[in-house]
Amino acid sequence: MNLYSLLVYIEHNGDNHLKIINASRGLIHEYENLKRKLFNCSANIYFNRQCYQKRLVPNYAKIKIPINSPAVKFTQRKTQNLRIKDEIKYLYMKKQQLNHKLYYLHLSLANTWGNTWQYVQYTIEEMT
Image (cartoon, rainbow, N blue to C red; front, side, top):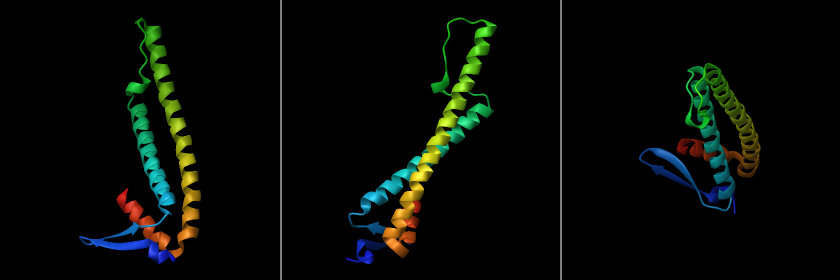
């Protein structure tokens, strides 16, 4: 069975798409899911950076302390900022790991699919 028998070319309303029909769907779905996770991670980084720059506190970073003295308010603000900074650092590490996995999966799929991988990748990126 050659690579071209694994793909069905679909033209729908002027859009060109490839539909994958074989067992290598698993790796391609993994690639799609990693791309989706990477996009979500980048969106979360952007959200947290905007919150930090505009001095907004997301719900996950709110800390409730019953006493309302100036020292407590100062400490509360510092801990909330620290929580946001730690979340941004965590998300950047997660993004780096996702990029690393995505890179090696891309190389593996490119070796498996050969010249048709460009079209498969284009179809995946059009859908996500």
